[in-house]
Image 1: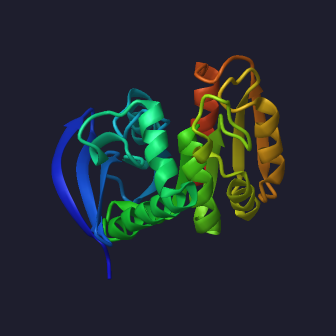
Image 2: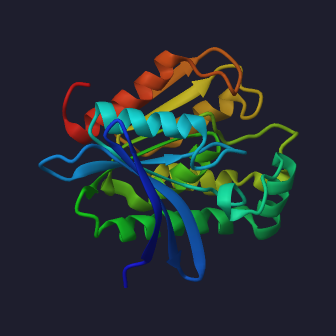
Length: 257
């Protein structure tokens, strides 16, 4: 049975159509946004974008990614709120609060639920004539990488490209200890088969860079690329962003962007 998608509203800016929606599957509603490029002769490949901690599906960086992919690469983009983020909670939660909620439920349970949420969205979008759900890419940093690796392990060869980073096998002391799941993360990484780019901040204070490099080494993809930039966790250069987007777009469209 295909999950129901409840389309809520839409608007068009510079030819890009943005739709808000919710899926309803297994008693859990998943809030999301779909961006579609101007109509073309064929269905558009689809990029899944995962937001970072304390962000949401309409965070500025997510919207910037979505509009770039739609306008410059002819790709559709979908983003959903992560656990205890965005419309899944009545009001924004500070990091210590949502981390405690996740730890209470159990990190592995939350990872599995988020994978199921993404899969329900993909199943629902399979009926959209303007989206080619057979050509998929994933982009997510930090928390978006945590959930993205679990999803990439599940989707395997359905993904044409994966870009993740700013996440590793170890975390800082300030993060709730219940957020750590190094064994699960290592197992997920080994199951990833899609071409992958992994981004490391060399002075990352949230996820130590040595643990990020170790995680990259565990990724099972035969085609993988490690990118290392100086700076702390939140630092992101325009060059890095361009590299992420181009890597995914070129694998999805088979064109030089």
